[in-house]
Image (tube, rainbow, N blue to C red; front, side):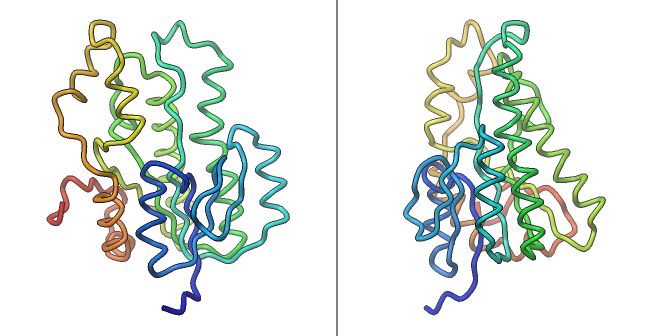
Length: 224
C-alpha cells in the first residue's frame, strides 16, 4: 500500500502505544513521540517530563499529520495523598497534561484536526493511593473536552480501553491490597490483550470521530 498519509502516536514504543503502531502502520506513516525509539520510521525521542526539550524538538520537526493519538502517560508514585510530594505530583502532571498540551498545540499548527486521547476510568473515579494518576488523568480529560468546546471545528475524542494486560497492570497487581483495597478490582477482572483494543480503535476510529459522543468506552462497543 502506498502510504501517503501520516498520523502521530505518543508512547508508541511500548504497551498500548506499540500495539496502536502495529495497527495503524498498516495504512499510515506513523510519527512516534516517546522517550525510546519505536519500530516507526519516524521517531521524536524525548522524555515528556522535559517540556523545554519537547518544545525544542517539535520546533525543528514540522510535520503534517491528520490524526494525533495521545496515548503516552504515567501512573506516577503510588501512595497516600499526603505522602506524595510536590515534585512527584508535578512530574506526573507534566507527562499526563502539560506535554499533551504542547503536542496538541503543535499538531494544530501543523494542520491536524483530529485528536484521540486515551482515557481511563481513573479520570472520573478516585482509587486508593492514585493521587498522581487520578488527578492528572482527570485534568487530561477536562483539557480535551475544553479544547472541543473552544475549537468546535476540530475533533477531540476520549477513548477508554478498560483494563489491559500491560506493565501498568502488572505494577498495579503488585500493590498490597491491604493498603490499597481498590486494587482488588484488578485482580478480579480479566486483563485484555492491548492488541485487541488497538485493533478495534483502528477499525472504528473514523466511526468514533464522526459520532457526537465525545467519550467512548471500548467495553461498550458491540465488537468488543
